[in-house]
Image (tube, one colour):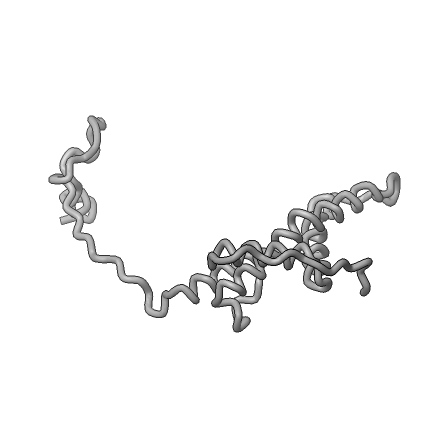
Length: 159
């Protein structure tokens, strides 16, 4: 028996003919095995995977907790929604023309530089917005009392 004959003898009934609707369950007999979660697959490993996906350090001790995930998510939100657009606008408005105009590489990868700079700015400084978002997210995740308002006001950033 050739390989083609072996393959064609195992095909379900009606295969290779004009389609006349869905295949009935009698013509397809597939044995299903119960899906078993991989060993060690629990909530902490899920939270670590989420932290990794958001760009945080999944090996950090707090990465397997709700608080660690919320901290990374709050920093990512402030970085993407507030700081990165400011940096992009500053970069695009200050581009020189003529001989010193940005090349194709700078135009193509400028947004990556903006994202990296925004992440560094948010990680380096303690923004009240990050703390407020963090408290609000923790309150939603854990449930409970509303967060207390921010009472301190910082006058400026220091490097």
